[in-house]
Image (cartoon, rainbow, N blue to C red; front, side, top):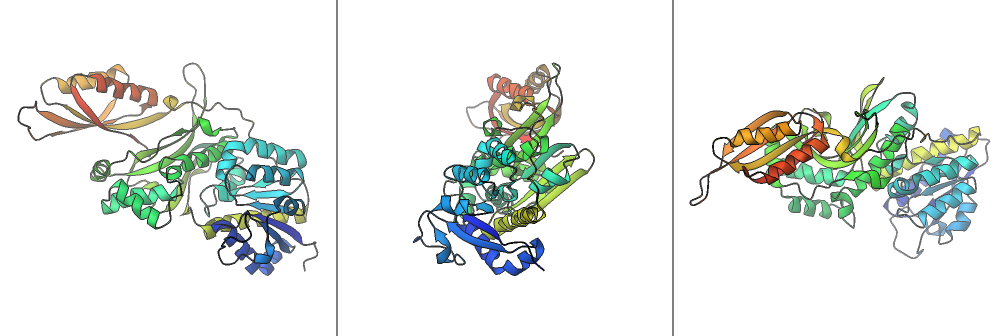
Length: 439
């Protein structure tokens, strides 16, 4: 029997996610009340224009442009507007009034997360954000709660479904980047500004959030190294397939061991990389997401599922809503997130990784030795070399393509090798440089 008073829910935003949240909240009202121990009453939906066309499931009588009044009358505020403002102002207003807040706003959290968490802690409110990373995949709560007593060493994942779809189509159908992007656009996978996806901005925001949680350290967005997929070619994809790899846009967060000077820290980065086809992430197809977590005690864990979509994101929002509502019924202050380890966020040159470098070199005696010497001079060990002689072109010196795979080294050393190769008389050109992960 439900005896607790009804909990008042304010919804900010009625787009694809907000509409699904409203629909599911209203349709499942009785079942949710039974789970929580209190009725969940949707008291209003704040929008910019009440007359704009809405998806089905958004009751017109609940729409309002007066977000501030709506927030002040709520116990729990759900923000699915997106963007920095006015979302930041509204969330701070809600937290400062003592309301719990649920948000799916990855950009806001990656940019102003510390400010929002501090505001919640000061008044004993709680900020929930499961939907901010990988939509329906439960990754925030495991990092925030289930693994809170463990030591997470590394996270590697595919957290942008749009780019995964594009790369998957390039791999399986042999499409060019442009054709695969056109398909993704037609299916509605890409953002209105496609650079947010294909240049890695979306993934960078998500890995900043994951790194902050996993390592209990503030990871500013501008400290996340970022490369997108716009330089991935059809030829690279074919070469990867022939050599037992697939190219994925990876978001990686990891602890970095102390160097000779004793400095240790964390790294957060996004870039396309070769992944062995036997690795679990290589099997993530289409617009799906997956996150691979390596913890000291728990070992290797993988979270897989749909990483985008209005109803999928709404599922994560409602999961947070149930948690928030149960906290209200049980009573007690919100629990602060720990971001006090104060580990430095290290630059990309401190990470250890592998490179695969494809070189167009002069086909003459001594060239291979010269190239090997350049690797050795920078402390980089060569693991594999494949050579293919190019067809002769009348009037030009003969050339060969060398595909060199390295052992693990610092990114600084590997980058120095690439620069030395580019300056070498033995090298005509460097046709491809890509990192290798998952070995």
